[in-house]
Length: 136
Image (cartoon, rainbow, N blue to C red):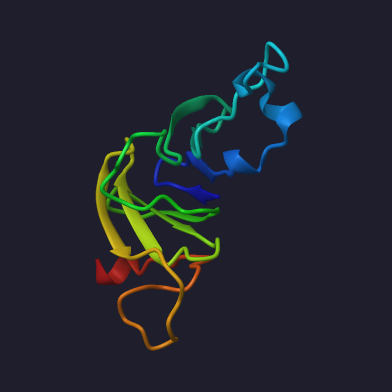
């Protein structure tokens, strides 16, 4: 979770971790008339209202210019209005940068098996972020 400058609460959740009972409407054939996974990024105002949602792994046939985490994990909203996301799944060696609206900006690192702790081309399952407001 993260909190932005407007005190909105940002949640980076794991829709692929739901059980079949929790995503019944999306199964083929549908198991129930309810329950569709929410997008990975959810934004709530202080009253608890959902004000924005976006993100998640690409649908079949889509080829986005970034690697979505295999297991969503870290989120940070910086003081310049960007959202940073990471994963801690096996092979999640990247950090993603988006606008608050969910528009992709840049990928740092790459997906794949970690070669060593000195490999500068990827990260190793980033779990948390910190942002230095003084350095921006």
